[in-house]
Amino acid sequence: MKKNILVVGLNAVIQKTIILPFFKEDAVIRANRYRVDAAGKATNVCRVLTQLGQNTACLTPVGIPNRQEFMDLAKSDNLTIIPVKNPVRIRNCYTLISQETGSATEVIVDEPELIEPQVETETLQIFTQALKESDVLIITGSKAKGFSEKIIPEMVKHAKEKGIIVFADYRGADLKNSFYSKQIRPDYIKINQDELKLTFPEFFKDLNQNHLEKSLDSLVKEYGNTYIITNGDQDTIYSSPDESGRCIPKMVKAINHVGCGDTFLAGLVDGILKRQTLKVSIDTAGNLAAKNALSLRPGDIWQAQDDKMNV
Image 1: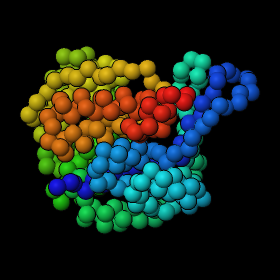
Image 2: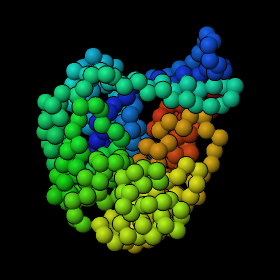
Image 3: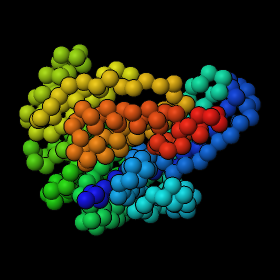
Image 4: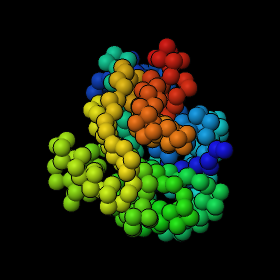
């Protein structure tokens, strides 16, 4: 029986991916083509899990000024969005891909307005209702400006008190404050090495490999949960109460790296829910992330070949 997955992201995005013949400063460049997608880390995760056949919904704030555009884009990808209305526009991101060099540059444009306190209250109310129908919670990405440092830890606490599996892909105070006890904390944490050191400096004084693995073992013993540590094209290190080790990421000549981490997370969740071992889940997630790297759409494992042929 499939699980119901709730993905929460507190910073939605409208993503425009632009293909340029070349990229040069102080020049006028005519784009060859572009595409626009509903995006943001949670939306990307939701898209991949939907493509994998999982029952998935994404809860995210959607700004009233450009809400309809985001919702229409999400609908075109068959995504289930649980929207929280707020007066602040959804932020825009632009990915500039040079055909000449194959480089991809992402430009993130945050809106200057702050999320108002009542939006946080409404977000928690809608979250609490959505959680009643959920078996798995994924929280990923940064918060829009104005959300308090309490909101993400409160979501984790509420979910764990109901016995729901929690996957975390965020960092800093939001993550550290999500550790209440050995029972109330995220079950799976996907994070990169720099974010790990930033979040748990008392465990990770440096990031040499021996120290990293010993410190991971200490965290696992203290909290009984699982860690998946990425490091670009270097080995992915993982540690859980049952198994630990390394996986070598699959390397491809990327068209667009945006959404690869989100695709990895979705693949990881899918593998674990299918009762694969942690190592197999990570290897499968890496293969899916490689597929996404060949796609113009962020968080996508379906259209890679068509995109590759048309760039």
